[in-house]
Image 1 (spheres, helix red, strand yellow):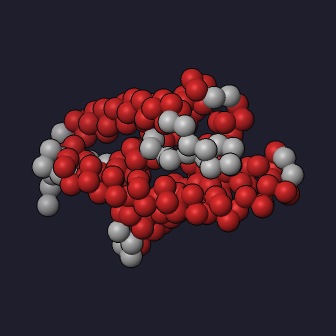
Image 2 (tube, rainbow, N blue to C red):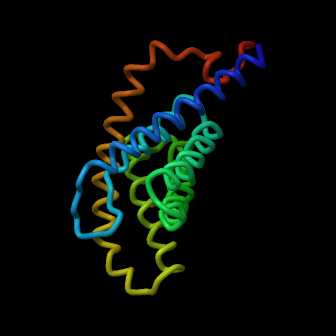
Length: 177
């Protein structure tokens, strides 16, 4: 039964990467003009959020990391990979910490992820450009909060709908008591 859990986690990762890439493409088609370069809704982060709750941190991390790299090559460039990668790493660590604490619900964890994603991207911009990018911080925090609320609500709805299809063996939980 142990190998079945590994296969299920591998399948979750493959499906998550595929769904994340589709959502990345769909998001690239949505024209959102906030006056900030690269500001997006964050739909692909829905996959990471749901996997964090449904399959655990390792599948969520692996899926998110591969999604960032592949979507950068498919729909962006090396700079978009650097920005998205920095945002993803900080966002994932913050979501992992807040989800693990149990103090926030899925929407709160998502807001934490949205805000920290934008902070991670801003930190990368500081490294690659100049300190004047800090003037974007207030707008990025507001955008991250709004995107986090939307993603969190959608994530809660998705997990609620999938709950009856998810079984302990699929999630990698032990079959022994």
